[in-house]
Image (cartoon, rainbow, N blue to C red):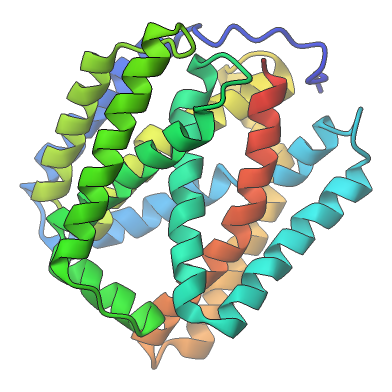
Length: 305
């Protein structure tokens, strides 16, 4: 296994090719949504989330080990488990607060994955940039599938929000994203083409508007988040992303992936007669594992610089 402190990653290698492939697959996903029913879309989405989606976070233990030169593995593992406990504590205090926390940390994670490799560290604006980008993605989906979103949030938290709340958050996040991005590009802290990024957002908005809620989210989560994350992780662990290193990655992570899937199957078996409650529990299980995953990936992103 390559040591993260001795790897010099070229963050721009093959990125344009990967982005083009992702864009083509996104358009294919949009076309597919016009050919199959929303129910079939949801089944496909769950399948992708349980495979590529879960897989991209299944190798955190190996990644923790790769960070052990400066931080003992035991310490990082303790931080990982402690983060899971913190989210569980939030859930016990208030399901609504835990859900808001999950949305915020997921938004930040999406932004960091998408933009982190294309900015100079340290930057005082990076946290706001990551959060605004992720909130734009999530609240694009929420606003374009408003009724479904309100129902899920109500079931998961007991809170009911007015439509204007979702619209206002999207507007604020989008304005904030544009202001920060233009400022960072002008100051050469961010290496992106703003027009191209806006085009990507427009494509995603079209996808979200014409797909089911779950399928639209899966297209973003798998194609725009999980696959680039897998690409980065394989590069860090093995030096280069190839079919052989992908197989090596699978060998090192499949046990954790199987444990995750089996855990969800057991959960489903226990709660199958209460499907709505099952969805709520799954949301909070995802929240509990997302927070420590974000910690690991943030550390990884900084050390790539």
